[in-house]
Image 1 (cartoon, rainbow, N blue to C red):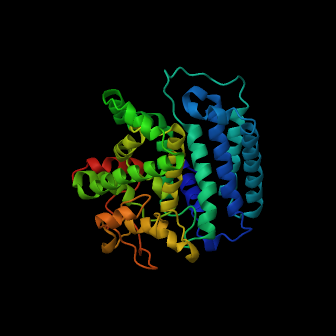
Image 2 (tube, rainbow, N blue to C red):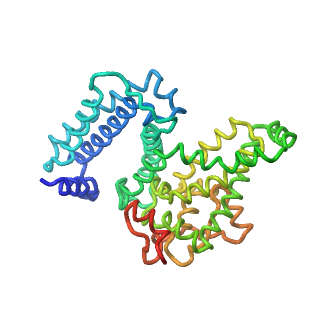
Image 3 (cartoon, rainbow, N blue to C red):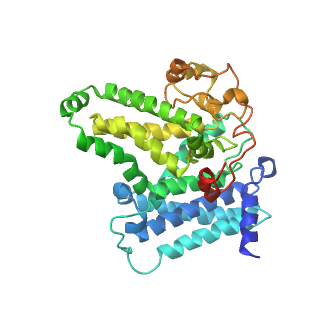
Amino acid sequence: MPLGAVRQKLRSELETPRAQRPFGSGWLSGTLGLLAGAAALLMVVALRYPTLFTTPELAMVRGSAFFRPVLYVFLVAGFCLAGLSLLLRRDKTLGLAAMTVALLATGVGSLPGTAVQVDTHGAYFGLDFFVLNVLFAGLLFIPLERVFPHQAEQTVLREEWREDLFYYLISSMMVQVLAYLTLAPSRFILDTVQAEGFRGWVHGLPWIVQLIAVMLLTDLVQYWVHRLFHQVPALWRFHAVHHSARSMDWMAGARMHFIEIIVLRSLTATPMFVLGFDQSVLQAYLIIVYVYSGWLHANVELPVKFAFLEKILASPRFHHWHHGIEKEAIDVNFAIHFPLLDRVFGTHHLPKDRWPSGYGIGGHPVPLGYVKQFLYPFRRP
């Protein structure tokens, strides 16, 4: 069978509607086996070529006592789940794919020789960061979306999941470039503006006060940058890529044009890095904003008893209205953390007990596929 036909068959199997894959059909074991084998393969490649595919900041994780045992668990799980799928499922595509990937991971890991050191002159691609990134987010949000779903019929591998997973890959692999460009304005200000007294005063504030201040300042900057991306036509064409997602879940937040990521992160990071906040505060905030991005896009509906939180903190329903396809959802709810900003600046919209009827942009002008979406803003309108 041609490779293209195999890929199409595998894609069709992965996206099998929930009604056609009851428990015991071998679909779940095949899918989990494929994911486990793929994670093991990527980790093995990263360990074999550490200077090329690993993030220096994650050296402690890779060198920990539990990293290799976890890798072996993924390998064994890949084999066992693939075998179970082959036994249970009439169509063997998923089971064979999972078994192939697990065998490939084993083969790469058993090649003779130690880790291959490639002279990259300090440059690297964060393949290990991608694996840990997706595993952490998936383990955090998939259970939440299953237990508290807004759209119960929406599956994990929903429409356009491949595009959004690829965005995860690109942003993780290019983490070094993104970090350098994001911090460029902050480095320039720190080198040119002498305000050590003020920075020292900020650094001396109580830890929790610093954290709240960071969240407020970055949210204020992001509010206006975000709003400009909606109101300036040239900027909107970049931001339209993010709004092109027709389904909302934890993966949808990763869909952002590379240029927008650089502009948005560099401007919002400026007050965070130049005002003298404690390093531990910045680290805590980075974890919060990372988790919060997935949370806002997640297919999660808050239980009624927690609904009051929507008045204080941005919730999935609040941000889903920002992505709504209907007219009333246009240019509303720009804040990322605090809805108060939208109330102050007149862009707050959260109808009681209602969600958008759909997501995306009217007419769906943004094409599918990472390359086409990357080129979309540069095309003539």
